[in-house]
Structures are given as C-alpha cells and as structure tokens.
Amino acid sequence: MGDLKVSLMATCGDPQLIAAAGALGCFEEDSSAKILEGLLALSTEERDKKCKAVLKNSFGMGHGSVGDQGIFIFSIENLPRSATLQLCLPEFASHLQQSLRRAKPDRGFYLPKKIIDDKYISIAWDILSESFEFYQEMSAAGIPGEDARYILPLYTKTNIQTALSARELCHLRAASNKDVTPYIVWFVVEEMWRFAHEVAPYLFEDFGANYEPLAWYPSSQLFADKNLTMDRLVDKYAAKDCKVALVYQPWLIGAITARTIHEAVKNRNEAELANLKHIHFEFLVKMSLACFHQATRQRTWNQSVEPIYDAAQADFDNPFSRMFAPASIKRSDFADKYREMYMKMMSLYIKLIQRNMPRSEAIGVVPHSLMVYDWIHVNGWNAIHAIGKRTCEKAQLEIRHIAWAMAKYIKTAMPIFEGFVEPQCVTYGKCPEKDPCDYLEKRKRKTVKHDGLHID
Image 1 (cartoon, rainbow, N blue to C red):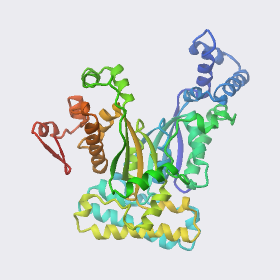
Image 2: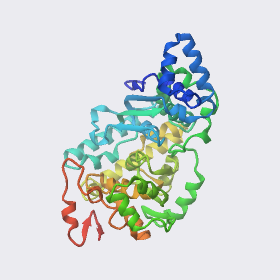
Image 3: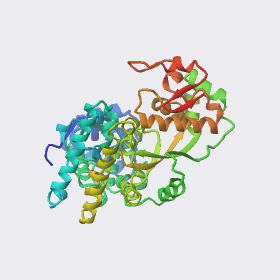
Image 4: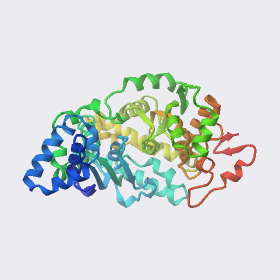
C-alpha cells in the first residue's frame, strides 16, 4: 500500500494477561493484582492455557468490559482522510490527528488500485493534483489554511495516533468488513487487528459473542449503504434549507433548575454535573465533511450521520446544494474557481461510478467541502462543556457557527441555561488557551456581535 504504515506503539502491559486477571478478579477472593502475580508464576504453557480459557468464557461470551481492559495505541502514517473518518466513528476510541491545516502538497494523495488500473487514471490524477495546486495557490494568497483545505480530496494523506480497547477494535473491524466500506479502510483496520492479535491472540479469538453488533455501543456509519431514519429527517428539514435545526424538544424535568446548573458549574459539583446528562437536545446539522471530522471526534455527542453516498448523489441531483464555501473564499477572487474545482471533483466521482467503479473506491475523490447531515444528541453537560469548547474564538469557524446556533436553541428552549451555554472562558471563569482573545471584555458590553450572530 505504498508509504502507508501501521505501527503498534504501545499496549497497557500485557493486554490479554491483564484482561484475564481482571476477569478472574470478578469471581475470586483475591484482587486482580494478586491474581496477576499468580498467573506470572505459572509456566508459559500453563499461563497461556489459563488466559485462553478465561477470555473465552468472559470476553468471548460477550462480557465486553473484559475486552476494555486491553488497550492498544497505534500510529498510522500516510493513510487517507477517508480512512480516518472511519477510525474516528466508534465513540470509545481516542485519537490525536495531524491537522488538515498542516497539509502540504508534497505529501500527496492516495488512489485505490481500482482507479489506478482504470484507463481514467490520468484524468483522476490531474484533477486531484489540481485541487492541491489550488489549495497552495489560495494559501499563498492569504486564504487561511483552515478554509483553503476544504477543496482537498478525502484521499489526502495524513497521520493519526489512535488508542482503543480490544472491544472497540473488534467493533471497528466488523464495521469495516463490508462491501460499501472503502478498501483502504478495511486494509488499515486489518493491519491494526493483525498487530493486536500478535500481541494478545486470545483477546481476538472469534468466539462469537464479542462480534455481536447489539453488544457494541452504536457509532455513526458514514459509509453505510442506507439509513432510513436519516432519509426521513433529511426529507423533512432539507426543504427549509437550514443548517441547524432543533428536531426534538428537550425533556423538561422539574428537578433541573437554574440553581442546579449554578451548583454544577460554579461549584464543580460532579453529582450535579452527572444529573445534567439527563437533559436532552436533538439537532439535525448540515455540515461539511471537514467539519464532520471534528464533530465526530466529540465523543460525548451521540451522532448518526447521513451516508456519504447519499450526500454525493444529492449534490449530483441538485448541483452545489451540498457545497460548503468558507466566507473568506466567498469574498475573495477565488470564489468562482472554488466552485469550478468543486464541480470537477464531484463530476469525477460520478464519472467513475458510471464506469462501474465501486462507490466505496470512487468516494475518496470528493472534496472535504461536500456537506452531510449529522443528527446530534447533546445532553445538558455537553451544552455547557462541549459547546463551550466549540464556541471559543479558537475553534474552527464552521463548527463555531454551528455551536453558536445550537447554544441559541438550547437557551431558548430552556432559559435556565442562560449564562452557562457560553464560550469556555465564560463558563470556566478563565481562558484555558495559550493566547486568550478578548471575548470576556467584549461580553461586558450589552450585545456581542459574534461571527454574524448577535448574542445578548
């Protein structure tokens, strides 16, 4: 696969031994630490036999928490962004990813074998190369990197560090082993699984129950073949052409009051913070794939996303209806060229499909500016913490606008959140950023104009 490289950087000790000791500790008088000492005192053959039996009858029978005790940390180099979108979907995996703002044209892009073997390869190569050249041209002219990147294809190469448990790796592997999933995604996940299996084979035996989809905490499925619920939601709200819609009124329970929120936030009362998780807000948000990449890493938001294939088809049926263009580009001399480049890349996708290219292999040529609908559940704690992070002046502009719109809906639906669904500097009482902005000073005025929105 060219220069793509998967490395297992570290594990939490001996993952299968620790998981086995923990499983035994649920039923024995001794602590798992003492049990581990006993396991280590056994011969290698006896220890392996014991671990295999224990894991088969615990994790292998569907006791997922046992698999959660085995942690694996991977470094992956030069994989396409389309693959990292899949890696970031399981909510209980954790990631540190190279920013697309740091993309360099000389890093290049990935093309799947099916495109390379097709006679259309030269046209595909030229169009994606042109998108990188256009990115460089905009950057050199002063367009912020966070805005210029929208025109880069999903096949742009990047690096990522990923930490996940044995349970989530099994989850990710099963979710990626589907015909509608890009081959490169399957390949990367198989490499991760292969390395983990070498280190802890008995954690990854196919005992059956640890591959039961109902046993995993469900994650969004960007590469799904279909999503009937999302179809209905999109049909209902797309006609309104709104980027953020409150699709379900919160459950207003009398136990949560303004005093509750004050106690939770001002006094850092975790018991009250936990109570806020029982307040619910549901949003349908239209966002670019670049923005979705950020949103899906907000692991405490429950999300369901429109299949990317449906989004691409919707744009083909109604050109530019799914194109996101940052304000800095709209106002620049690059606006027309941006639309032209977007159309070239979307047309390339359609032409590849018409040449009987699998959707899963063609989809990587679409730009990050393609918009999808994301159904987001935000609880009361997220309303304070996560939205506080995303409304910060340091947050990327698109998700910042979305967060401000969500904040406005929340405060309108439940006025007791007024003063708490704010940028993190307001909520925390201080700015945690290295270079603070002057938002706190601005807020002293009666009205603050924030990115086109007036926040009282």
